[in-house]
Amino acid sequence: MRDNERVTSAIREPETPAATTPPRLIATDLDGTLLRDDKSVSPRTVAALAAAEEAGIEVFFVTGRPARWMDVVSDHVHGHGLAICGNGAAVVDLHGGPGAHRFVKVRELPRNNALETVGLLRDAAPGTVYAVEQTYGFYQEPAYPKLHMEVPDDLAPAEDLLADGSPTTAEPVLKILAFHPEMEPDAFLTLARLAVGERVTVTRSSPSALLEISGPDVSKASTLALCCAERGISHEEVVAFGDMPNDVEMLTWAGRSYAMGNAHPDVLAAASGHTVANNDDGVAVVIEQLLNERI
Image 1 (cartoon, one colour):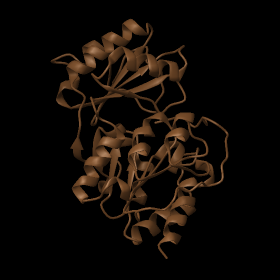
Image 2 (cartoon, one colour):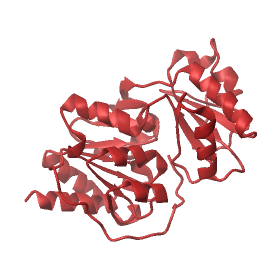
Image 3 (cartoon, helix red, strand yellow):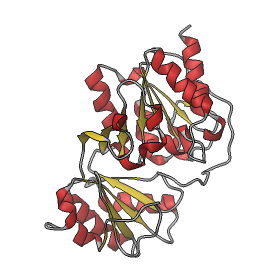
Image 4 (spheres, helix red, strand yellow):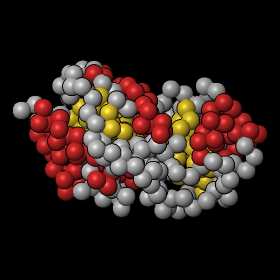
């Protein structure tokens, strides 16, 4: 999940890693990667995704977005129709369309881990405010800023929202969001990871100081690995695309990976290849090259 703000203005020519195993699956982030800054999917990208599926290459959307925000790509699913949402917290069948998504796999954040994390971060970074993301519900503290275009189901302190008997107990917690109004985003991420240890997985995808906190060992990479194992697909047969820190593990895991021209420096360092920016259809550029390799 990220705003329309660009992380960098760097524009790179596509840089392709040496071809190895033919790809069987493409895993792509959405915001800042597949989507243009206006949240559209360009005609060139639509054509490239369709061509990949026609060539027998599965396409997985792998995003920090919740399932209810997947309408931006619901019209472009092919074949299996599955997407990995919430930074790996859920695998969702998009075939039902907006509001009718089916959860195929849920990797929830244990409430005790979430409560411990809230307390530790309150001590380490005073002023931190929280929201709670569930399979269908969204709850937040009163001081949490209006970062998302939606109305929360309830307003209450995070400790109350995560407590036994709260309105949130009817659904799994997928992640908690932690926002700090003053800290620099990467500094907040580093501080949080040191403060909470291995109780949870902490990452970020927004240009603001907004952290996304999932269950231990839950990431885009680990859930993608599970989905690939179910299909008999090895990591060498995966091509991945991303632009922000929540993509780093996935880009490192995949056999071939591409950082967008607008990517965070950590992503540029992690990926085995680079492509042009999201507004220049960087994902489509690489898919076209991959398909040409097969001819």
